[in-house]
Structures are given as C-alpha cells and as structure tokens.
Amino acid sequence: MCGIIGFTGKTEASPILLDGLSKMEYRGNDSAGIAILGDKCIEVAKTIGYVSALQEKVLQEKTKTMCSFTGACGIGHTRWATHGAVLEKNAHPHISNDGTFAVCHNGIIENFLPLRAQFESKGYVFKSDTDTEVVVASLQYNYTGDFKKAFELTLEQLEGSYALAVICLDNPDTIYVAKKNAPLIIGLGKGFHIFASDVTAIITHTKDVMYLDDNTYACITPARTDVFSSDGNIIQPPIEKINWNAETAEKGEYEHFMLKEIMEQPAVIAHTLNHRMKDGNIILDNFSLTHDVLQKITRIVITACGSAYYAGCAGKYAIEKLFGKIVTVELASELRYSEPLIDKNTLLIAISQSGETADTIAAIKECKARGAHVLSIVNVFSSTITKLSDDVLYTYAGPEIAVATTKGYTTQLALLYLFALYVASDLKTISQNEYNILYNELRDLPRKIEQCLALEPSIKKLASTLSKTDTVFFLGRNTDLAVAYEGALKLKEISYIHAESYASGELKHGSIALIDEHTKVVAICCNQKLLEKSMSNCLEVIARGADVHIIGMQAPASAKTAHDSMHDYEIQIPFTTDEFLPILAVIPLQLLAYHVAVIKKCNVDKPRNLAKSVTVE
Image (tube, rainbow, N blue to C red):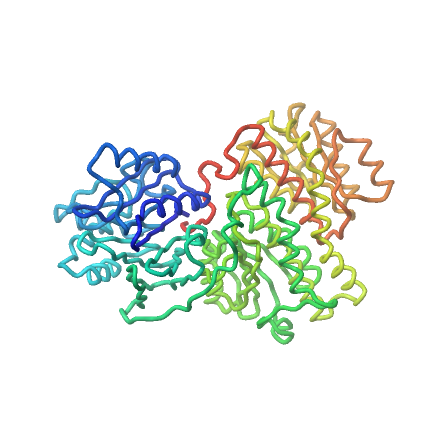
C-alpha cells in the first residue's frame, strides 16, 4: 500500500528519492520521509502529508541545519497508516537509538508486540507507535560490525509481510533489502542501482529490472546487486525489460490521471483483445487450460477485492452462460477464511490490477492447497499473483495512476469475456452462429466505448445535479446490478457522496423505506430481457418522489417510448449483447463520478484514506 524506494550511485540521491516518491503517491499515503547516508550521520527528513511537503522540508533542512542531504545513497518511503496515528514520529524512515541504522518498511510485522517488549526490557527506547521500529531495534542488537549478518538475524526474528530497506552508517554505499508478500523491484543501471515498490519510480532511470521473489533478500551497491535465498545462497533472478515508456505515466494534456485513463480505454481494450483474436479464433498462448482440463472443471470461483470483485460480478454472467458451469464470485478477504468447498475440479479465477493484493494472494494460496487450478487476470508482470498462478492473462492496461480504477476494471472485464468465449468455442457450448455474433461484438467493443465517451457533455449535466446531494442510490437487475455496484463505488470513492447499489427487485423488501422526494436515483436499465421489470422498479421510486436518472441502451422504438414517459434524464449507450453490456454501461458512470468529484473540488486522483495497491489485511 505504501511506497518504498532506494538509490545508491555516484550522484545525489535525495532528488531521485523525492521524485520517485511523488510518482508512487497514487498508491496511497499520509506521510513521507527520506534518509540519506551523510559523512557523519544518517540525515533524516519526514513529514505528514504529501511528498510536496517533504520536498519543502528537505529544502528547509538544507538551509537551517547541518544536514546537507547531498549523499549518494539513501532510502525513502510514503506511509499509509496501519500502526500508529498519522504523526511525524510514526512516519518512516525510523532510526535506531544509536543512529547506526535507518529502515523503511511496507507491510506489517505481526509479532512486533513481543519483539518490542523484548527490546524494551533490554533498555531500547522506542520513539514511534509503529510495528516497523522493532526492525532497527533488532538490527542494533544483532550488529557486531557485519551488516549482512545483522540483517539476516533480524529477518529470522520477523513474522508477517514486508518489503524492507535498510542503510547502515558504517557502510556508506550499501543498502540491504528483503521481500515477503510485498512488491519490490530492483532497477539496474550503469554505476547505480535503484529499487522501489513500483516501476513508475524506476522507469525514468532504467528499464532493466529484477523482481525479487518472496523470502529473498539483496545487497545493493552502485556496482552490483547480489540476491540471496532465505538460506543465504546467491541466486540470480532473471533480468526483465519494462515494456512501457515513462510518458504513459504522465498526465499529458489532461487535468487528472483519472480522466486520462478513462479516455485511454478504447485503445487499451483494443490492445488487450486484438492480439488474442485472429481470423475468428481466440488464441491464448502458453495456456494450460486445455480441452481435457476444461472438461473436468465442475465449478468456477472468481475471487478479488474492490473494483476487481465487481468486474468478477459482471463477468460471471457471461462465463456461466457460455461455460455452462456454476460460477460464484467471492470476496478474497472472506474466501480466505471460509473453509471453501474447493477441490481439483475447481477453477479459481483471481483478479488483481497490481498482482500484489494481500487478501487475494492469501485466497489463492488457500485454494491451491485444496487442489484448485488458478487462472489470474493481472496488469503487472512478474507480480506475486502471477507466480502463484497456473495460467495468467495480462490486461496490458499500462500504468494506472489514479487510485480509482477505470481502465484496469474494463480490461479485466474484457478478459473475462474473452475467456468465456474461448471456453464456449473449445467446449462447443454454443452454436457457431452464436459464437460468430459474440466474437464480432467483442471485437467491436473499443469502437462502442468511444461512442460512450462521446456522451460526456450530457454526463456533465447530470453530474451538476448529483453534486448537490448527500446520497445516491444505484439500481439494477442482473448484469445491470453488476454495473450499479461499480457505479456506486466510483462515486463514493472520489466524491465522498454516500452511494449504495441495490438489486431493483429487492427494494420493496426493505430499502424502499429510504426513498422520498429528496432521493436521487441512478437506474441502470440496459438489460433488454429485463427492461420492463426494471422500468416498473423505476416507477415505484418515482411514485415516492425520487428524482430518477436512467442509463439506458439503444433499443427498439417501443422500449424507447417507455423510457421517455417516466424519467427526468436519460443517457443511452450503444446496443450490445446483454452479456457484454456492463463494459459499456460503466463508462458513463466513471465519467459521472469524475465530474461530480471535480465539481466538488475533491482530490480526484488521490482520494482520502485510500490506497492503490492493498498489500496488508
């Protein structure tokens, strides 16, 4: 969830660290800090708030204190609070009592309380409320002049998850790092090395990277990086190339990353689909879900968190219909503790933008232990989830900087549709004519998404209306309900307006008590098979005074007349099949949430309390 970075080379480290931290702010943070190895001490600056505040503080420290912050080796951190309030004393880096070590840490040290008690009994004075500070306490007590040995002994004491970075005053150009259930990427340069939680902080310096595996650690110097297994043996992770440019992580002409990423959706979805769809066939390279394996599957479980979970809810309908098997969608945070009824004939589809979502990783491990075949849908190459999976489908969405996902969600959904159609073709669960219709419709989605984006002027008008309310209800049935889930989440994520999604048919069983003349309702009425029932539900809330706004789909004239007779406002998406409609219907809701947040002057790209990559429970 936090961001971690380090640099060692021949040039000043602090500008590189500060720039890298600013690029990782989208991951979520409430404080930031850096530690630089100076000639006589470890120089530290940290503050609550954004990295811009840290940049100002570093400048102040340079002019007001003896700290120069000109050293060529250092570490930095953006914190998202777990242990301890948002206070400067709890910001990273943390320094040992004797000033020898500084540490930055992403993750949670689960046994920090007994460790803290142990070191306090020896006279160690803790200056923060964090779990992280036990790391420097352990380093101080284990250090006898050998940095590597002290680091190894400290790792043996720690339980939990971590990406750790440590510098030592006695080793002026060396950084030790370790990884367990948290992302850590090392960038390889000429005369320097850099590492971070995210490639966005590395890409401007080098495209050559190594992805550390869990339970490994590394010694990083300007000249070389040595990687070790947990038993201390040197290993050689493969060197990989980052496959996108720094410009793709910049806003360009757009005011916000979120708007840029919304507008990128036709292109990234075309990229996601096109090289896998050739001459009427779906080609999935290096795919072990062969005909024989698919035939043996009796159940499919989709698991994810947040918007990825809602992508699963939307994709379920297509997979269940085209596969002809039972499909359930489970929150990863619940699945991991539910004693799931999963066996070797279960296909687990795990969805995660980052590939580092802690709850999803734990759910995968639980299901793999029970024999499930794991197919993951992720955006980040060589992430933890990809290494746990039997098969991987990459979204190719490129970097998504805004915390509220848009193109990440729709590319996940596009791949769920692609997989559903692939299975239908392989198992012959639909006719060739049905397959051809769906194949062509899938290929045409990027063009139709462009048509949805062209609805922006009308959506701005609706945003002006909704920005003045405190609560919005989103209604839908079947595939429309899946869209309502994501629409409500987007609105509350970035505009802070209370929003709830309800199954339209369930309103009368309790929730309709909340409806009155002050209620704003967004009704998703795109599913053609259920259109009349959805319209009836709209009438129910209109009769109670609600202000109803309908997201519809181009349809025959009779249905269009029915729409026009009962609503105040309508946005119509292009016609598509009911199976694929969620990917089009969500586009207006993304734009709606965005423009409401802009009107309310919210921090669109960095909403309060949220993090992009959730690597802790």
